[in-house]
Amino acid sequence: MKVLVTVKEVAEVADDFEIEGTEVGERYLEYDLNEWDDYAVEEAVQLKEDGPAEEVVAVTIGPERAEETIRMALAKGADRAVRIWDDVLEEPDLLDVETKTNLLAAVVEEEEPDLVLTGVQSGDDNFGATGVSLADEIGFQWAAVVNALDYDHDEGVAHVHRELEGGVEELTDVELPAVLTIQTGINEPRYASLRGIRQAQSKEIAPKSLADLGLDAGAIESELDLTSMYEPESESDATIFEGDASETAAQLAEVLREKGVAE
Amino acid sequence: MSSDVLAVAEHRRGVLRDVSYELISAGELLADATGGDLHVAIIGGDTEAFADDLNRKGVDYVHTVSEGEEFNHDVHVQAVEALHAEIDPEALVMANSVNGLDYAPAVANSLDLPLVTDAVGLEYDGDLTVTREMYGSKVETTVEVSGDQYAVTFRGGEWPAAEGVGDAEIGEFDVDIDTDTGSSVTGFEEVGGGDVDISEADFIVSIGRGIEEEDNLPLIEDLVEATDATLASSRPIVDSGWLPKNRQVGQSGKVVTPDVYLAIGISGAVQHVAGMKGSDTIIAINTDPNAPIFDIADYGIVGDLFDVVPELIEEFS
Ligand SMILES: Cc1cc2nc3c(=O)[nH]c(=O)nc-3n(C[C@H](O)[C@H](O)[C@H](O)COP(=O)(O)OP(=O)(O)OC[C@H]3O[C@@H](n4cnc5c(N)ncnc54)[C@H](O)[C@@H]3O)c2cc1C
Image (cartoon, rainbow over all chains, first blue to last red; front, side, top):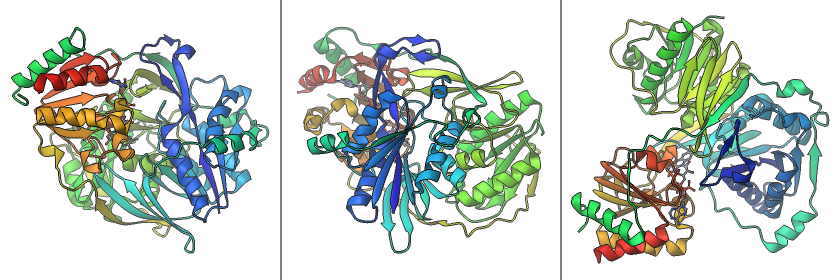
């Protein structure tokens, strides 16, 4: 079986930052592999190590800078990677679900995987929709928010747990081909070994433009427009203790005593 | 196309989920703005009883689809598609819940509707503008929808629950549903049981990713011991296996309502806040003055936990 795993390079915002137009200023951003995708990569690599998967291909939508992140996935055990990018993707402030679905669907068509693993959401814009939207587009079965996966190779069925709210899990059987959106905690993502990092240097990252994927600009037309970005007005009426660590700790201790929860 | 709004309610194991009533409130606001009717759909379960309960102020129609006991995404997708074809509404509104994540994107894609998820605010002036958050609630954005028809999912807990009794027309919507689709729910499992029940605690010391390493946990355990508190945590601590699942506070963990909740190195993500916002007094220790946890805190220290916590232990020993 072949596993396609989607990875995204996400930005994290520094404690202090400024917004420039409809973006956070570039110098306040730090890039990393999306937390949820880290678990998806690990799950894919484990499927290879345990036998059922012959090949793990990572796919990302992102500019050249994203190669650093996708190399992480390669260093952790993915066999090769595809990076989708095109100048026309630079323009919109928001790559919406529909656009990402179209781009990834074109890669699925080329790669013909049996299983696609995505993260539940990305930590920056947290739409949480790409995996399931993609499943509909490519006609695969799916399950969202998967925190346990047991794949039965003979039956071609994934026995999964979907993590619902309030400490309840739903047990679901999903026939392959399928898309599963992976939740944090499903496994323990490995750190890339030095050997893995070295090997990743010689693994293929195939760049794909819209034209390479047989798509035209229509594939990225969007009916959504990011019109503003701002810092939410603080609703805080918290009393902030001032002073050094011992002074603030003393004031906090006073509150705990007043409330009668600690002596 | 009509200017109507179609809202899809949610249920689980015999009860309507609270977000259903919130969708009605949000849906009513939107229908007032578009000038259309508010339709509510309920798919599966005890649809008759659910429909009576969903008939709240502002609802014009309740459509029941009596297929299956529990949520199944294939049933949901087919039922919502058929209802959408029938009503042809301007707005399709759904919950940004775990089950919402499992069917809303498929419906939107299959109906070719632009999708905005996790809305926390709405404005309408002929076009819909949705407010949503990014970067762990550190910034807000507005997204303008230019399509005539669209799908939006709403964050739970942001709109009031609809109340009162409405005079909605209630009817079963007939639709042929193919149930042999390759995905089937086989059961449910409760997780997070065990020796402690943090939801009983009066004083909770809760630790988040700010602790950095498992080796630093004893510092927090010392504080717990010195203050006779109950230890809890945010999700990453449990994901990493440093604490058991029964210590996790939040959407997918426990809901707690102690007298005092002391959040240390926790940013205050919406899924965490869902589990602790009902605490009487919330205190936060965080290096980041912009961390969203301060929005709901009563008291706070902007500082490094590795400096503050040892001093706090000192206070109580
Ligand atoms: C479907 C779903 C369900 C989820 N369910 C839950 C749930 O039940 N519970 C839950 O908690 N999360 C849940 N999450 C995850 C949630 O979105 C966040 O990722 C998580 O809550 C973040 O945990 P955190 O605040 O500990 O970490 P972070 O967001 O990384 O925050 C760490 C904080 O520590 C501060 N910090 C760092 N160093 C220090 C220091 N030395 N001193 C003081 N402060 C410091 C930082 O400023 C930061 O604010 C869920 C997510 C999804 C998608």
